[in-house]
Length: 471
Ligand code: ADP
Ligand code: ZN
Ligand code: MG
Image (tube, rainbow, N blue to C red; front, side, top):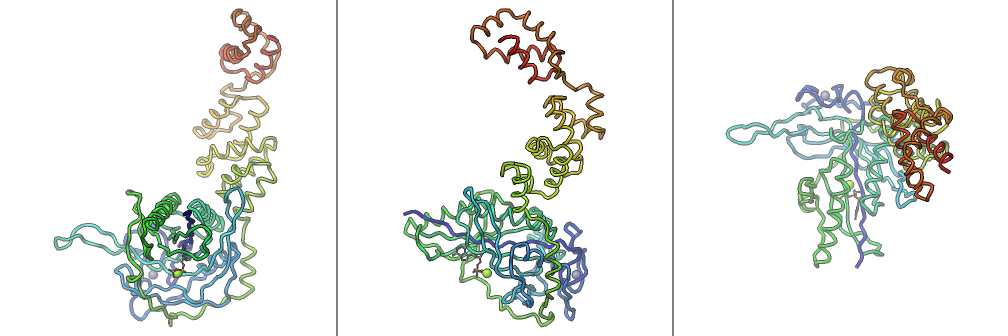
């Protein structure tokens, strides 16, 4: 029997606000333990949460960018559970009435586009973090760092529309890029700003009903999500083929061992006793605000890829790499505007120097000049690369370095005549063999001429001159 997987993803994205979602504490990552805390986010009695307007704005912009319906009224709810990193013993989240419903994201799959549904987006606060460190009374000590308590998150829940780990990876990457384009999330996966829980089940191909799902946690890179899904799909199929049944459970991905392991079964699942938070009024957003925010949505990655293909004649692959970063795509367009002659080469250079470009160490002029000089034969590809490296080292302009270093190449055919003649005169046997049909010797002659000219001859022109003289 052939099986098919069904995958739905829940993404937690940290909103890039200065302060936390219900108090004025800094939401910044990396402060000393418990530095960014106050009575509100540590859940002291008698305090009142005040909703961060920026967090709402960022969530609405995300909803608009993913074609969701922004709900004019949504409600914050308490999700009750005990854990030492959650001093209030409840997390403020949204449950029955989230801020956004029913959107989608388009991904590239199997050479075409596939639409992945988004069920809902809701806002919530993060919990703190336990650090298992040192010893207390002869046992392992655990320390609570509450800096992350009440850091603003949005949870984006997809429909079970994905069928392969690759589709899940494509969805996650695209969603990630959309949030970074919107500047609502820094997208840093190592710091936990973008995390994903993956739900997966399998069913015989052709069957309509879904199988029983497992929820996978603890993957901290796109690649790990894909690997965890690959493993889990295989595990579920093998379970069924061995006559067993998949049980509903939460499983943890162990990246070192490359396996998922059971964490808790459905029977052990929490009953969170959700109820509307009496400290917070329902969130009502005005139409006019939503419309104003609609005007702030930039060109999104999918649209950018399509436009780069269309406007510059780039292959989809190249356009995709450029569009994976808004800054890189902008840099490419700035370079391609300075030298319009070879957008594909400009794209290659932007991809090649991506790290330096994103670190702000190169200007569009440098890349434009490097490409232009190379395209018109003033310098060789090797010299172009060396010169960009020299720009990075010295900060001097590309063309000044080119002239200082004397790296321009000889492209004037008549200037190469004498060198070519000398090389041919020095290798009469090879000339004879070439004329006798061994045309593969051309590269030998090119090499000799390059050597004789100390690398300054333009190899394209050298070939032309050689062919003429040998022909
Ligand atoms: P739960 O109540 O367990 O949280 P939800 O219905 O809220 O489940 O769905 C959570 C996520 O799981 C969603 O992304 C959804 O698309 C996905 N999902 C639901 N059912 C399945 C299934 N049978 N197989 C794979 N994914 C599923
Ligand atoms: Zn606080
Ligand atoms: Mg759910």
